[in-house]
Length: 78
Image (cartoon, rainbow, N blue to C red; front, side, top):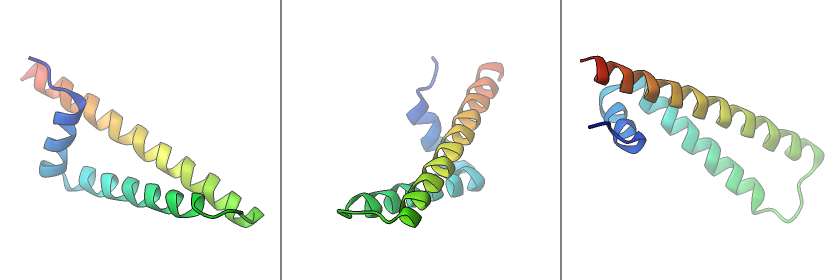
């Protein structure tokens, strides 16, 4: 039976310190974005920072997804 992404993510969080670090960094980016979005007004510099954080967060999400896909392939071939 194929594992769901959430199940694989939980396993990777337990087994892979690199994946765990990526996930924690992704959560930190999410918190930073939430803090910025609570403000009634963002300066141009803050808007640039929000854009930068969103790009880094997306890059991490993509990298984590690739790790999930690789894990799934390893499990299927085992």
